[in-house]
Length: 364
Ligand code: NAD
Ligand code: IPM
Ligand code: MN
Image: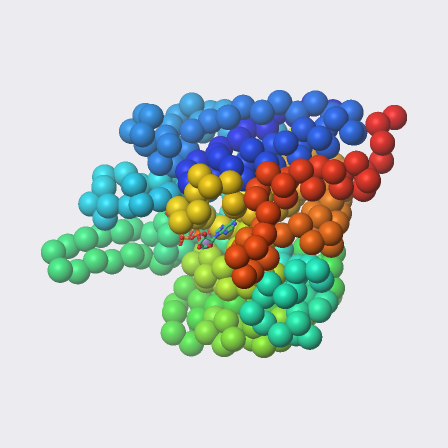
């Protein structure tokens, strides 16, 4: 097949990790006889520097035309002045909103060879296999923001429709897995959470009676996620809770540098799903430009791109197996190697590409 992929490197380690994932996609394309074309566009701080805007119109237009979008990360100290008129992060929020990417899937599957990288005891991590479905285009991120003298306000708003569609997506995912759905909210305090809980309960009862639904308050969820992570299958939650819980969940896998994500919209008339794929981590300004960033999260995001946007399930699995094999072989970047050791991004990427040759079927 032929696919057009828009690449948005962004800032900090974004260009380093997207370059790694593009190399892996090229290698997969070669082995399976696909041609992927890559169109690199500006977003975030890099876009502000070049155009004054965090999401230039040309970037959005290219993204809308593309078969899929691969993104690195945005932001950094250069653009973090609280008084700055425009911020890199606005570009990311704007593209998610403009493309209707309301469901952000963040799978967490600690790899057996990297259990030592996690601060959690290994016996709690074996068999952990969960997916957080984070609502991505609503809630406090997108409500009215005001600053009035000595006070400020961020409005958190959710509509029934916004909750219904993400809960449906999560429940359908649970149905294809172990049939368990945990909806996370703060219904003991927040009105939006009471609406969330009521809606989740109704949608599951009406449309997914075979799914086992439980509700969990976000504060105790933050604790249970570390004390009994194996018990979770699919977790669905609002935008900000999902952001925080998944950075926490990255510690089950051992590093932020291991967690991929897929931000998905609805399927269009031709059966195509709009998708943006990015690691859950940020631009990591503290290590940017040194060639030491862990590329696995972005490479695994490219695997999700192959699966969800291009319908290439075998190819996706091949990339996932290649990353797993690289980890099995002990190819660890500094974030997972510990005690000052570890290889650079280059060696980690090469290891994945080498493993691809072994894990994927050869070119016919
Ligand atoms: P961060 O995720 O960038 O970094 C947190 C810590 O994890 C740092 O110590 C970093 O070095 C480490 N880390 C992250 N990714 C890594 C990788 N692939 N390999 C090795 N180590 C890695 O979070 P932060 O420092 O809070 O934020 C920095 C900037 O990134 C901010 O401007 C923030 O807004 C932005 N950010 C962007 C995104 C995104 O574009 N999706 C996500 C999160 C944060
Ligand atoms: C993420 C990031 C973003 C978010 C920021 C950079 C806007 O933290 O993708 O997790 O909060 O959604
Ligand atoms: Mn985040």
